[in-house]
Length: 204
Image 1 (cartoon, helix red, strand yellow):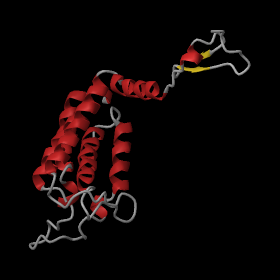
Image 2: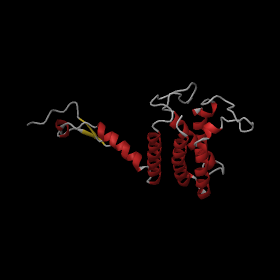
Image 3: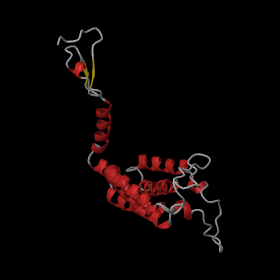
Image 4: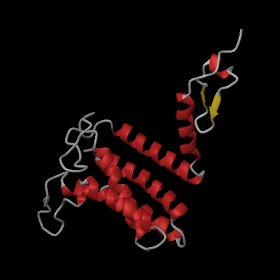
């Protein structure tokens, strides 16, 4: 697993994401909702681990095997999506969304090491490095995601549109002969140029 410090650091990134989403889509009472979601995300970022501990017993041993039910990706993503669609309609939606943001971020941080994460059924691992190593990469990636999501939300999706436009522009093939063709048709959606099949090439 990622180190405890890494999970806490990525939890702050998840909290920033949650606060930005709640403020933008939370409706009335978004101020309290964003605070509640922010705090819940910090708890959620370590929840998959502390929920494994039998806090009610003196020994406080694990009551389930590590990285099993408490790390189940389907449950965390279902909570994330359900809480998102409930934002602005239920007072517990914001903290539930924040808690899920933190939990999903925890799973993403655990995913690269050999033990992996049970996203659906069996564990799956990216197998990039051993547990506790490359924490700086994990933390940096989480904050890049937080920055990109926050920017995209506050600037009305301009980052997403710019990315899509970049992909479209990169896929366009501009041929000089086609551009000079008088009967070429232009597809405004992708800025691609489709020459007419029956047209003759222009005279040199």
